[in-house]
Image (cartoon, rainbow, N blue to C red):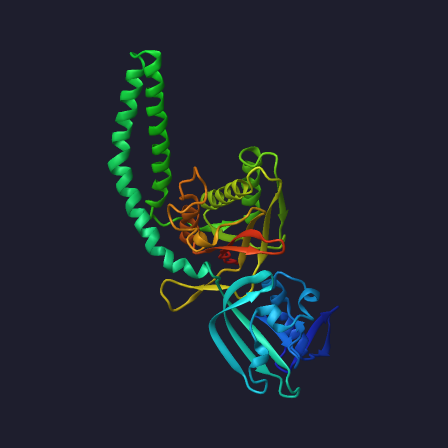
Length: 373
């Protein structure tokens, strides 16, 4: 099949050329094919039509979006704006259904032949209330890197000597003193394990990014969780089977998912509940690159969802900072390390409370692998 210069599609059929007029696509076909999320809004502020990209962005079907007031759909009072003139708002925060925050560029255009009717386009930045803090967290991460390197160098070697001395004393002392030497060894082992975790921050070497099947990685992390810390729990999978390969580092992605699954299992404690893993493709989601001039598309969405109580308001904005934790026995390094590993791969991690009843959502937004011919 070939497109001729005269606007005809020529079909080769049993040696004879057949010509068929090329009809231009309809407005609805064009709207459906666009990668930007679009909503058609009636004069009374009701959403009357959306495209596939909007369904993907909202994570809702067309029937669940159409009929909503525009304020309920995006948390923006569109009806207060003039309906006969276009306008744009850049880098603003809107709230998608389930109160999911997102930083976007919002553009509204009137339909010239329909008074009061408007088309709303949403250009996502992949920067929610916490996602927007990626650059803000860089200073904290650099501080943690320096602290971890210093502690690993200055403390780990003396700790090894202390443990060796305690082990040697244990062979020569009485039973009552052996309890104290065991206590020394256990505490040294605990501090050493903490420093080992901190050393994850000191590795600043670039990682090799290759195409990865994210569902295979999810399956591996899920199996590890069910055989260990999440034994007896249900881990549900809701995947988009058509998802393309993600560009990432396999071992780092496995570590990220195991940390998030462990965090989810611990957050629910002894209460019954389900951990849910989801994947989806998000059109139009991007993040500004380090050079500041271009944007990195982040269309691969991966969520780890649990039914725990979530973080308190006091620490919600600091979850990814080192040494911040809600657990009595936690070190506050798990999520900080996760954020570093995600950032190393050019992605973003967000925390949110979504749904009714509210659930905890850790959302990863990652780049897709380029398709090579």
